[in-house]
Amino acid sequence: EADIYQTPRYLVIGTGKKITLECSQTMGHDKMYWYQQDPGMELHLIHYSYGVNSTEKGDLSSESTVSRIRTEHFPLTLESARPSHTSQYLCASSADRESGAFFGQGTRLTVV
Amino acid sequence: QKEVEQNSGPLSVPEGAIASLNCTYSDRVSQSFFWYRQYSGKSPELIMSIYSNGDKEDGRFTAQLNKASQYVSLLIRDSQPSDSATYLCAVKTYKYIFGTGTRLKVLA
Image (cartoon, rainbow over all chains, first blue to last red; front, side):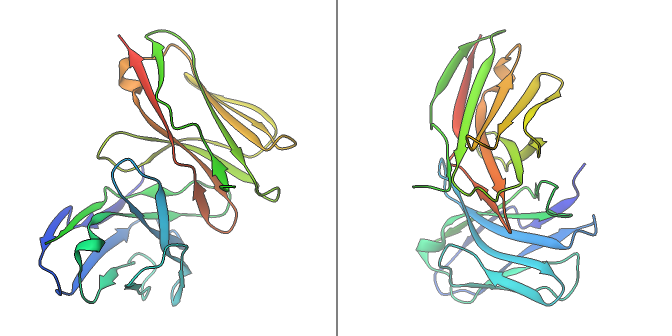
């Protein structure tokens, strides 16, 4: 069973606020990912990391940033939230190129 | 052309029937292929992985891969109403590329 945790599960926040979405995994996976998904729509990769101190932007233009100071922790930060950031944010991790990615339960963000 | 293509559905099958879900991909160097199940409002759950041409069976699920045709499929035998969900095909290169998913409805 995959052990990857996201907090908070739900967040309603005002425009202009700074927010950090937390993601932690206890599996020792090197690779971690952040996806954004609107209801009924496809997943879009916004950031990924292959290990400590390694981060890359994904395909979706994003105003967020990430950090990877520890293997198990991959937080995503929005410096100034906007209503266009309203979405579900999914964190995932994988062991190697041949294994599938395991997802956390997601954070549903609403910016008002 | 999208990198991973799936019919969005919905695909409706009666309970007990075989559901057949299909996926095509464009990148010939892709080596790893996955099927995920996603219930409404939930995160994707990995159900099958396949790396070699042919069939791979796991319980009621069979994944089929044809690299020459760049085609991956998922068969669900004895479909149950609890199988009603969106099924996502994913292809791994240096990242996971997901299709838009096929919505499956199993009618009781």
